[in-house]
Length: 151
Image (cartoon, rainbow, N blue to C red; front, side, top):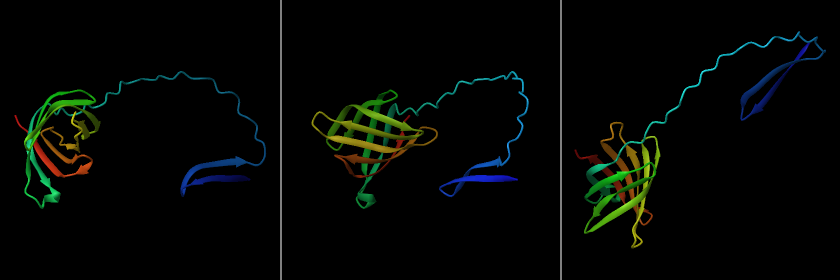
């Protein structure tokens, strides 16, 4: 006679064990066998390069206001930073911002010495030539951005 035990967690079957009620004689020791293990280096896909000129537009206010032109010149990119120039209206912002990647999705944050904070949260397409993002200024979303890398 055997008894079946089942442990439930979140309505999923996690463990199923059959336990005998009477003691069973143990099997003789099984000699150890040699096992061959192979290790493989795991490489993480590199983040897309944003270096170069980007042009596009920002649909302000969900597209109800005519688009504002967008330009970004990225001079340097590291794993965690982006350095470049971004003109907005009459003001040009230059400097280095923090950059975070998750696959092709990115978040870029920049704060000027004058206290202006800008952010882009978006994605770069598979070939690295187009980006779609949500720009924010001073913590408030200002619209939707669509830009293309200019050759």
